[in-house]
Length: 312
Image (cartoon, rainbow, N blue to C red):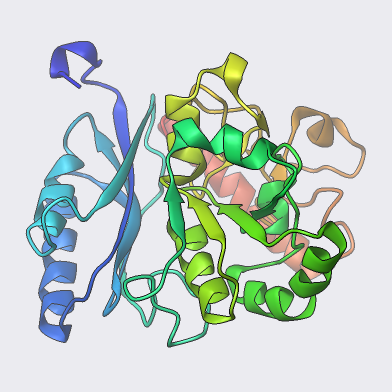
């Protein structure tokens, strides 16, 4: 994409990951370099670094965030980093977080390693054919609240609260589902590809052989597949202030409940249980009056800041 094609006042959002070994020294130096480059260029977002690789989403003014990407790529093998690009008219994150972790996506099983054992990568252009086959079991590896606002036609919802719950579902629920469906072919997907890549490694380790996953995840599928040919239904949840993206990778209709973090559609926010920044129908019985007083004060501060700076 050329600079002449983009409004240079817009914000570029880069979601990326790579499963590739890093040394402890590289982790430390790279963390500091990312912090320094991001601070100098007003780049915000989250970057996780572990011995198994790097994972993150960052946002900055057009083409500024790419400076961080170039720094990360200098520590990785050539063409190793999987990158998805989208755009926004405002900053998508409130702050910068760069953390060294045990895993770049937490599944909680140390010997699950996509570099050594992984499923078959499926290009977005071949995905529709695969999941339309009645002999394919399609599994959404994302969390319950993400699936609630959008998923692929016919996909199974494991009803997990976080990715660490997925291995238990595989052990306790998946074998019976496969038996009932009389199929052994599995196709999995997630937002950007990292969770389903690790999930295929888990399934291969557990003895499932015919395992596939969507390369580049939902974000790449939405970018490459025309809407009139798409089997995606709804919007795609993202972990930033945009909350959700539509098929054009533009901010969708959903907002966030700042009390419990659940995505809400316009109808949810018209409900009698919704109070901006304090509660929604999903968390009305979850918090104490003391919590709600704290939420109300936080919302008051947010509103005051938005009056000063509408881009927040």
